[in-house]
Image (cartoon, rainbow, N blue to C red; front, side):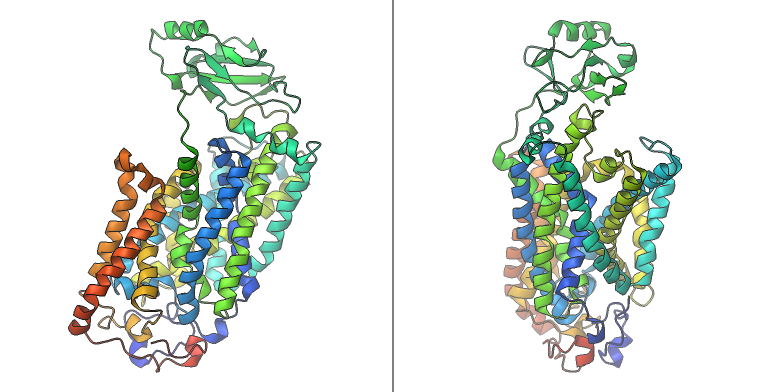
Length: 593
């Protein structure tokens, strides 16, 4: 990846803030059409985490219709800031790490850029681990070995191969990324349709399949007020239990516990049996100390913990949490979308491409996730509990008997992970790291740093905490977006001085390179977004952390800059006109001051 020969003047090209990778993208490299931008979003949205999140919504107690509505609404919401923030990238041909110098200062920009970069590194690690799981499944299928459960040497070897594939495309540059996205987009849509076709054959009607989603909403084992435990293994389409026996005991004694027949509805373990376990444990037995396991013929379910009965959150709270999580899913891209739109041919290409590529693809893959997961409950006899349902497509595809089907499908899933990871989780942090030392670090070296940090965050431990992480991360990144949008549209009216972006003593140097108004607004936004995490009475602010943080920073930054801009004008030279920037370097956009 290179910015080409953008002519910002000889002085600017010798600036410590300049490098070819960070310079305005030349017109010759602005080749991404509407379809290219849409293909990037199809490649990013049609991914395994999208599939997992939709399933998790149902597991949290939402029905399938609510889950799909949340997916569509949330992605329509986040498309708006993506288009608005992408406008600057398309207009000036600059990445987020450079455009952020205007509101935050030439030094202060490293704070939001590093926050975005580190979050992306975490996502890079998780996605690379998912890609490794696909490679592991392919290898096991080819050699005829069973897929290992838990962590294993084989999975870590596959993770290393996945890591190498990711960095191979990064090293080849953005043109190879564009080609990969264009190739992958139709493949990913086809595999989604193929999974739908398989799922449709598992029952007489789509309604019967979607009706299975209710089984995913209830815990497998839960205490009742009378001290009994109610069990909820999966049912067949005719309403009969899939399991024929169960056993319940503390984990250390489960193997020796007697099997009891599954009969009656509801299926209740009486209080006397629970009391017997308490007596064996000298009277001390927490709910989590009991697990239940089911059997059907030779098939055994995974042990499921017995959970305490808890009041269900209100529908409003659930919707707000999941809308924030879904918006937070693209919180990183909403602030760094300029890293992609800087290669767009026009504003229309970036806006229409994003609108076509994101909401529809997320809705389609969300529906595929819900429909296929529900179909798997009746399609595979050895899935006896909701915990054992194939929540991700890697686990689902591994259930098939045909090696050709498994290898082909897992290969396509690996491509899905590649396209999402490179575009969403490598380009922005690579630019952010390059911006730390522009004369030393290139885009390629920044990508390598991203890869190393992605391993260090131990992604195999973060894989099952995606939804909670998304809400927490939203509290940090929403305020960054608020400052960016307020600066570009409210304060500067979309006019930015290119030479000053590359001048350490220019209009965006502020005081010691940091804009105190931006930092104050950022800190206030993060505080408002996260205070509910520590103060239960304000929990709604945390549940809606992306919205509360973004709005707070937007308003506060605009107000602060309205009162301090005159002070900064008197303290430093005004932004310089950009007529000296050649049309070749700005893509023929004309003056930008």
